[in-house]
Length: 356
Image 1 (cartoon, one colour):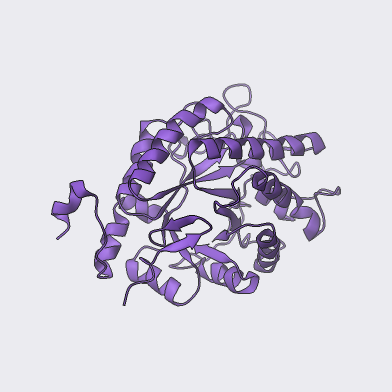
Image 2 (spheres, helix red, strand yellow):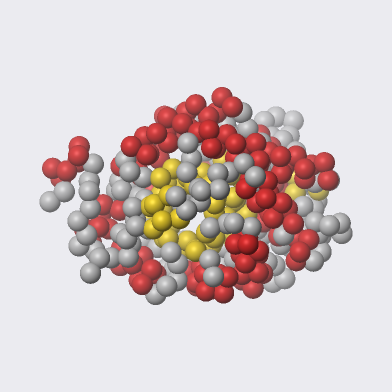
């Protein structure tokens, strides 16, 4: 009997050859938002390594939407050129190129992790951050984020729409809206960071408004026959925050809007979160959203072994399994997983002599 992990999945006109997805992972290696050969080799090696879908790291829709100065961006037509080259290689390996579009909000303007992940000085290379409300991530931060006004919100929506057009031109075949991990859309979703009193704050309907409006804007220019994902944090892991029940409710609305899959993660919003780490620790959230919102889901979080991933699919907890750190450790993870599950899959011809 064939494994579920290596059973193809069709979403709209795209068919993934297996259920293994490379999760978007920041590389902090871009200059002025431009991809380079590091991104070509990083993403390309995971494609030759056998993954069905490769989702490019959180790609900023505007310069101020970057987490760090070294983040990828798609606010400039010239940024398309290298991405197109990368995507053509991914497709040549029978893999599907995806992109995660993002705005970091109040978590923007920090240095790369290996430079301390510190807030950058606005008078030097940093910039003014924005958010749903003027609530900082850390209490002792030198600068408060600016609460977006209506004009600022309209710019964010427009930036997502423009970046989506460029994503189409660059040859991406899956698009994911990043509404998780404490970045801008998540900052609007959660009452811990959204204390607004206008139509974007207060009630559940108001807090989800920006995410829904961005989904509509993206849908207006993203091809209707290509898959659209949304990544959410199912819980803030903090009292009074965004919760799994709201995640289900939002997922139902997004499904009505034409979203195909919810990529279910958690946390990242507040520094005082209390995450209960362990293998599969986020999988129950993917299962809850899948079953209660009746939508495809992706599972993430300390999934490191072939049989572990297979069981998630066998148990009906998710439809795709996303790998982050484990794929950094092993670019050929799908080839190894196929061997572990006694699946005979096609290897790159250049590597076939090492297959047996």
